[in-house]
Image 1 (cartoon, rainbow, N blue to C red):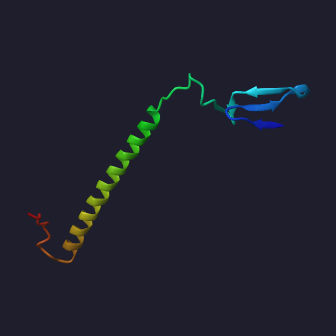
Image 2: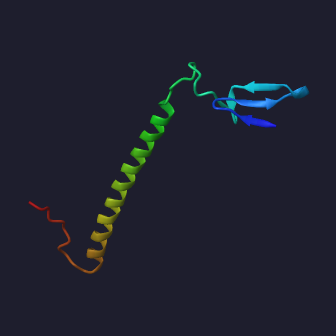
Length: 86
């Protein structure tokens, strides 16, 4: 029999004794002062995701522009240069 408390698990041990464990489903107790707030891995993962998103958006724009240029050239036109807006 397992009884879940606020921050610990009470397990019915041998002979009917209740044994209190300081973990809930294998996770350390969140109230533990030694529990580090190390989030370097999460921040690094977020940075990698942002970089991949930026590269993906840039690549999509470049491929779209190249596709439009190729469509223009394949249609036989000779004035396919992009005119920048002023």
